[in-house]
Image 1 (tube, each protein chain N blue to C red):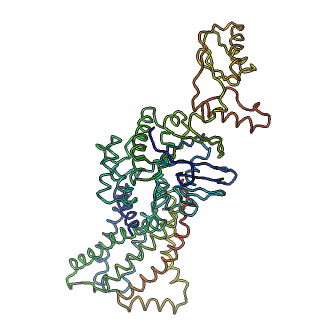
Image 2: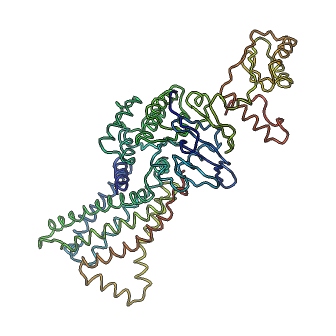
Length: 338
Length: 242
């Protein structure tokens, strides 16, 4: 992405957490989170709904207090110097938080004033940001009538109005149609690249994280499962995946495949299945098995390993290690929804 | 002070563009007509010379301000803008005092428009004029209007901080304001006769300026603890966001 990423010592990191935890009555939303976010990076914080992503952002901004552990953001302790953190951060939280009765320009102007920009700087910055996201011509319209995608893009622009060192984006593309989501991603990349800002991005869209992020952390039930480059996440967990296509993949065959010793997981497809297999020699055994069941194979090909594969593998491993009977309780061919 | 100014202008800008501004304006017009035209016509020159007249300037801002301050936090919560505001560099004080001051200044200023209107009505409707207030009376009226708006605003902010919705805040505030309005009536009924006689003497023998000044002082003293409680309850980490 051509972005300068800081070193991994504490002073060069935008965010450093150590055993950060937050309890709510009856639930531990964030559980001993220890991670480091390099300055200048786009850092993806991945997890399902309820994984503790939003709570983590609130902790890092000092909007709520930690139950245990510590967080340093831009060198400031979130427990004692949250005002300084907020002064150097921009946010797009769960809700865009736009002042809907006001126009786009007025929204940016208010937040520019909050960031203590001069009138001249506010006007220039407003024009620059709205031009970049293609909303300059609509700057005088109240945002109440805007689409969700346009609002999200405006909210990203707002997060950058005060030249922050760090921006927090909480599910910026959630609920958007694919084209609007692509627009938001494009704006985000462009604006972040120009500003050189560190981006802390939460999402449950793994393809998005893979496309945008320099580093990702995967959380589940408040616990950190893995952290690293998108290509490294869950690498140890990733087993070969092979697509088998052909005629004769009946429900019964798929059920038999689920029970097969060489098969980890079965992802059914319209004319076949993608199988996660234990090791490479298992492929030939599976071919023999399917031919023996009179399946007319047309294609046997490896499937590229994506971040999604890695994250799903992590989740499955987590399921297996947390369930009393090992992997028995985990659904074997359930994918997606992460 | 800069941050306070930012919050003030944000609040006024939002208020100006809100749907409820029309309700507030309609209420204000009714009050202006009542206080600036009907009461001078009904009471006559006493409207300006009676010592107790400045008390009128307390009740109306108190009612009006609650329509605005109910929105202060509960409205932001409903519109889901509160968390974004709390995530800015603005201090707790700037947000709290800014929201309070915005409603107080708006309502008190609007209310004070009815004072010159009342003087004008008096002079147009009665021949024995001119009827003009003293400087002290003008100052006392301003002080009472601001002090009453200040108390109403403080109660409004306090309730709005934790209210689940604007409607909930308005309901609680309506009960509070009516309770406050009934305190003098209950006092007159329950207090020893010599106390009520003393109060009556004060309200009829002093000047509008001195009576108004004293009343503004009482209101301000009542406002202070309410604001302190609101400040104590305004903690970023504990304010409900939804």
